[in-house]
Length: 374
Ligand SMILES: Cc1ncc(COP(=O)(O)O)c(C=O)c1O
Image 1 (cartoon, rainbow, N blue to C red):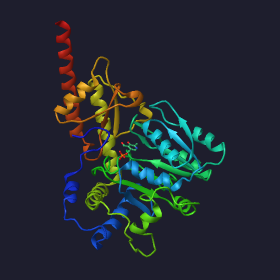
Image 2 (image 1 turned 90 degrees about the vertical axis):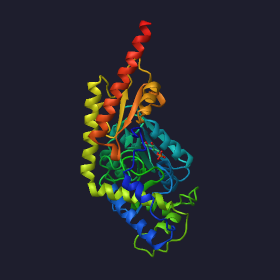
Image 3 (image 1 turned 180 degrees about the vertical axis):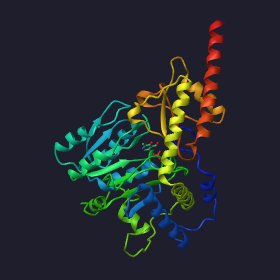
């Protein structure tokens, strides 16, 4: 059971789809599959943006594509840093040539909208980037107020929803998000390998008004959409790269499963699994690190009790077929990260995990007390 920060276990139907006969990336059947994938991905992102595709790369590649297309050298970019993945967004913006202004809070906290407002009042800003679900801390950064502020200041709003998409509401159009990037392997429930992205009309206008071509060829949106097809225009489908056909079969199937379940019921399932886990952990005497007001449902950051060996517990769990994640940065050795994503956000999975963790901790305590007595 993959109960770390991702990947999660894909539904067997998704794995089955990936094993279907291969066609080429320009085959008419595959071109239709691409169109269907774009359609379903729009539904999941809750957007009408035509420019919505799975980039041929993991989540980071999708975010890099956004940053390198929207940012030009010298642009001012404001980045909200509430953990490790916010830092990564800031680094991406710097590599795209931006002057980056970071808004930082201690790990576990989130950024109040007023701090974004204050930063926007300091002078013209091209883009504001934040992480919706910070996987390093388990924190949920609310987006509605920030989206409104960014739009009022005529800047672009970029959101990393790598961990949230498919497991909690992400409403790209309603929240004034101009570009968002996610991944295939967490709450959407496909294997790693694709970076779903969406670009709104303001983002595409910024791309078309660039002074120079982006410093990336592979991720150049103008070229990519000659292959994926421009909305309304002739779909000439020019060769750009050999698309990962089998990965897209699987991803398309994962989207279909998600929409068949219904987004709201899927979010409710993730929330219910989280609540059951929190109660189960409390019964074992364990607590969550992230303040309750902004806890994520799909990524649970658990404090490691004093005297308990982080690595030994994770090794014991792995020997029982369960993988969870450790902490990193300032949380290294202090927390475990337990993901309940996609097909794993169920009562049965939570109960098995809590039961196994309870046994592992009990055995470790018994061994420690035998050693002390000896
Ligand atoms: C919030 C967040 N952003 C970005 C990434 C990077 O995604 P990937 O590993 O798919 O490149 C991750 C991966 O865990 C993440 O949790």
